[in-house]
Length: 71
Image (cartoon, rainbow, N blue to C red; front, side, top):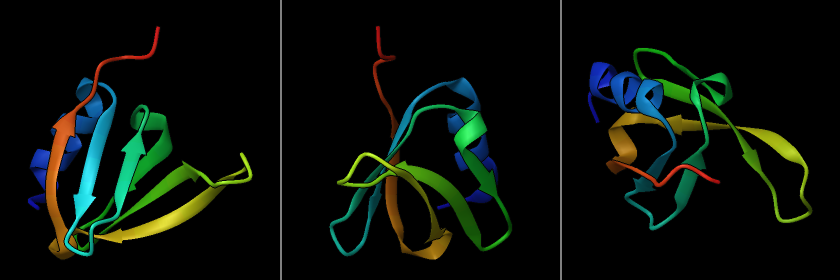
């Protein structure tokens, strides 16, 4: 995944990121992510409902696609 492309998608609204290991992460808005040259630090909601920091490698991202905004 290209850094600038990911930043652009995140600024547009909610994004779903698919990793090459099959994991899927949802980024609700730009306030929940910091994108660096090699990694993205993302706040994600864990199974217990608590938000936790997750570091995602840009090289391991297969795709990032816009999601429908929550109403």
